[in-house]
Image 1 (cartoon, chains in turn cyan, orange, red):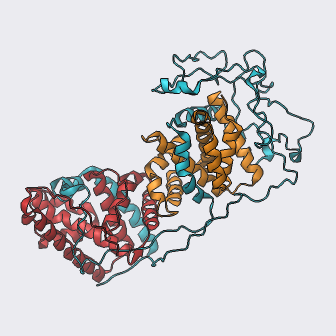
Image 2 (cartoon, each protein chain N blue to C red; image 1 turned 135 degrees about the vertical axis):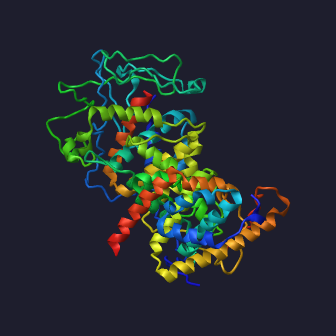
Image 3 (tube, rainbow over the protein chains, first blue to last red; image 1 turned 180 degrees about the vertical axis):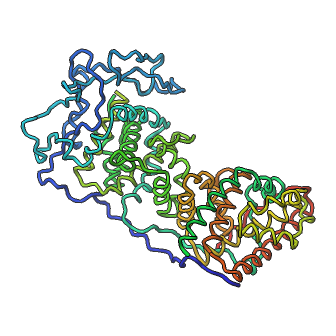
Length: 263
Length: 148
Length: 177
């Protein structure tokens, strides 16, 4: 029988796991002070009463400073985490935390939502948010202070981020944040597989033999997916309908064009 | 409530490949706080990582690139195709690129997908120490915007 | 479906050849005679199913990994561009694994005729295109398909001696060759 294996047999490749070490190369800065947040994510809210808040404060290593207390004057709502269970349906209309006071669309939520809150940010005359401790006289990266966004590889994208995009990110966050019964358990379940993403090895996987050739043994007993309808009138009708015809025609056309290029 | 240093440390350990440390820190997190803060941090990190990976110089990746990325994740080993649903994974990223909507899935599954996908995205970026810290800071800021 | 009434005849094989060469458009002029009843349709459709199985077997012989199946389906969907949605990735992977005697995935996607057929036909056409058969190669492929399909139908007939019109699913023996 003309058999024409189009892939090489792959034996089982030994799985080499990466050492339990840093994912990255050694830091560029010998004095490696952690930089504060470079203002990539700046809400455009204006403070309501001139008080400073510090979403950008103190975000070094765990041995470093801790997050500022809310007593700094932020107008926030403190949530009792257990309240989330009283809110079985996620409220999409939360207090307009990122909106200016003039915005008419601010709504108050009736029941406490898991993530309701309000942020107040001090902004400068250009409308850019001012992080808590900014030394403008020197912007030396080695000091671990705030850099110019243009110098920062990831902050370059900040420049391209329109205000609409920043607002959109908050919308996304609201849509994407999960409400597992036990976030820790759910996270733990994937912690090991996720590590594969940090390894730099080829894909591994067990090699299996393809089933015996059709001329050697009978067909397998696995049930046909979608059952006998697949090969009966229903299946026939589907093959002949516009939906498939269009899709396959265009796909075949694409493949034919590719093919023609290869001749 | 804000994202805590412990929660950031937990994610940091994951992204640095310190699995044992990560799991230890995870176990030590306050469960109720984690349900709010860690969940928000993960979602924010996922959004941040996806933007950096799939929106460059204002140009949004097309569907083929997303399909290709998810395939790279799922072909890693024999277990990964069972862990990551390609339809869900692709729809999550396409949603962030404003080219689709996330399909329905339970909360645990969505969280798991966010963690695996963001780890793969960060792994491909090959961040150094300070870049990783910037990333974590950025994600933390975004998360805090939601939960404060 | 009364499998005892399903036969592979010359016209079915001719139709298969046209399908492989020209795609489903080739069947449009024949649709009236093809759709007479389930068993008549099955004469044609079972060959498509057989062709899919043979093509997949050849593609992933002699050994394969699950990752390679993932990669294959992703590449096909990427190539389809805006038509990528026609191939449900889980359905496609499930179909391929079944064709290779691999344990089916936990989640094989929807068990419905439309997505299954879309995936099956698109994979088949892609593999045929990739194989780039010459005339002899095409005839051999068709021969293999007919052989497979005859055996498959014989098994279905044996199974359904006591069943009215539906195949009763058999438990899957786990076979790793």
